[in-house]
Image 1 (cartoon, rainbow over the protein chains, first blue to last red):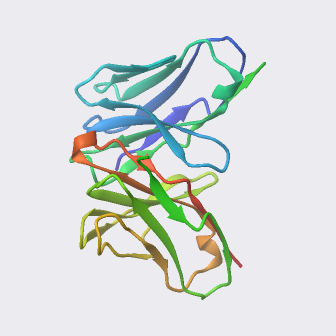
Image 2: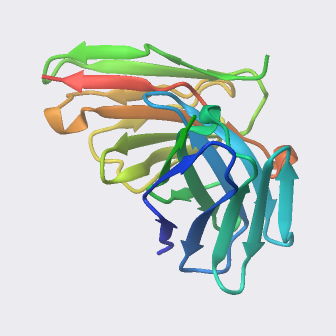
Length: 113
Length: 113
């Protein structure tokens, strides 16, 4: 059964720092991997989707990489801002892709002004 | 605007009183899912649906029912709610055309007393 782990569980940084969030998964035969952002008590907002055949995806200040063979993904946030404060969730879907998303427990990020 | 709409956003009910949480999507997605989110346990899948009249159990289906009579709607039914079903519930949808990138609703916070 797929398991997803996110490290660290919490992270506090000053504004302007570049940072990396880590995600690892136990079964490398994934269909895709998706990074989400969740604000307290709110829904999940999709940030980036990486297909199993891709190595990375970029959106603005965010860059997500995928190393399927080692079961790892990283989310890189450049020039962090207080508005980036949220919980970041990594989720993988196994083939065929539509049935189940397996989530990590998230990294709670606090960016201080 | 493409979205998944859940209602109600907040609900307090008593043990044993049947309730339905509605979910509707306007993106013509084939695939829909329900998740619950609990502190320390993360997000876990309750049920999913691959299309009209096709549903299957996720990781934690006990105490829940679903139906998919129309493509856009996927209600979650608690026939006899219990306090251990107090949780934050999310509905999500995806499609092959989006490479199974999931869109989530804003969540329903349910309290069973």
